[in-house]
Image 1 (spheres, one colour):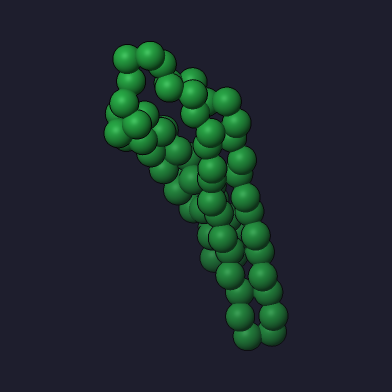
Image 2 (cartoon, rainbow, N blue to C red):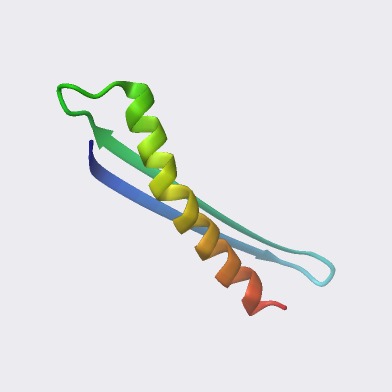
Length: 64
């Protein structure tokens, strides 16, 4: 599997009574000849989820 495109989105919304932070990631992958979609999905999530969680945790810490 090769990641051909990676997009990280970060959105902040604030008002007097409300604050929200949204972090998400999107990856486009190219499968190798012997890989299934299920294998690529599992590997992509294993790589992306910790990165997105870390980014969200850092953003939350800024406001604590």
